[in-house]
Length: 239
Image 1: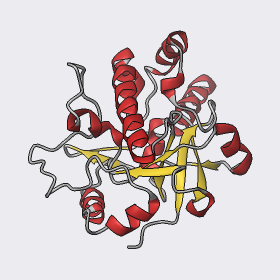
Image 2: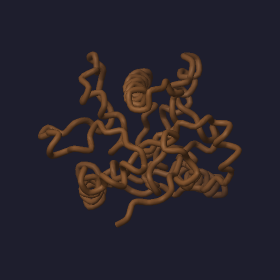
Image 3: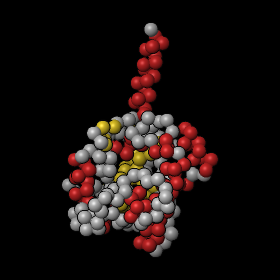
Image 4: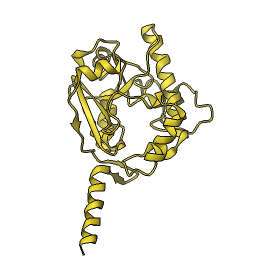
């Protein structure tokens, strides 16, 4: 299968696109935690409170270090997406939408890629500082030979060149076969948000894909679930 020639950015409809939660102030974080901690989504990261935010901030900082080393300039915090589509990511949101963008619309330093995402930088670079781990970390049998894609911040050209030699295709095939969550290639979008909003205006509603962990399959679309609950309540009131 040939790598896709577009990326998709997923976001909460209420909040809108091209935001990074690491840019939030403490009061804003508290408000989101309070509002979202009980949301019945496929994976509710906000239910972990400030612990999750601290870890995410650390992972983002390590990613910024990699970008600075690669391109020789200090970046703004990126926005995130995936190569092609991965509607399993829509399960993070109550009311998920996405924006799809052709890769040809970006310069080589405006989008980068990491497999499966940048959270593993924390264990790879041994910088957790006692913090609780989240997300996909290094496997127990990790070696650079067996998992050469870990820690690589790739341009699209490098992604195409390394799709087989870096065992990226092998990773994706394995994760898809198991119906695991991490069956995508993360995209980091480094462009200015206002530029992105003016260039890409079509919002696409997302129906989250199911995923399986330890024999249990998860599929939560909070909007659909709420509609079903409201419908049940209406039927109860009508009796």
